[in-house]
Structures are given as structure tokens and as C-alpha cells.
Image (cartoon, rainbow, N blue to C red):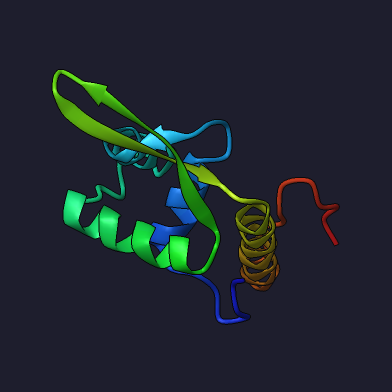
Length: 114
């Protein structure tokens, strides 16, 4: 499970990519790029290293394998622990953003201005 210091941006976006459905590696890469508004582009080696770590932490798990044009595609899915870790991290990040917005006098979406 995620610690109070937070998870890496890569892990956050990989978990976010898997919220709706299992995806294979290139599907995750594309979803991460989209969800991060093109700020984060994962290299395949980086992705599979992160997936190994997330699998070891039981935040994701293999879903199924499929052969397409003679190539094996392994699909990964978010586990219940992964969903919980992602929700906790999203709340942690939102709390940090609220502090900065208050200090800057900007207000925060969904929050009454004081």
C-alpha cells in the first residue's frame, strides 16, 4: 500500500490507466500519455519495471494473455488494494494542492472561498 510520502508519478498514472479495464503494455503507455495530458511518456522498459514493482506490491496483477499476430500480449488489471492505494494517493495530492491554493489565495474547485 502507498506510504504517506506518496507514490511515483509513473505508478500513479499506471494505476489510473487501469481503473476502467485491463490493458496490455502498449495500451497502458497510451493511456498514461493521454491521462497525463502528454506530460508523461513511459518507455517500455520503464513500464515493465514499474509493473513488476506494482505486481510485487499487489496493486496490479496479470489478467490474461493474448496472442496477436504471433506476439504475446499480457494484460494487467488493478487489484482492490491498487484501487484503494490510488484513491488514497489522489486524496493526498488533492490535500497538498488545497494547501498551496489557499496559501496563494486561489481557492480550489469544489471548495468555498474563505
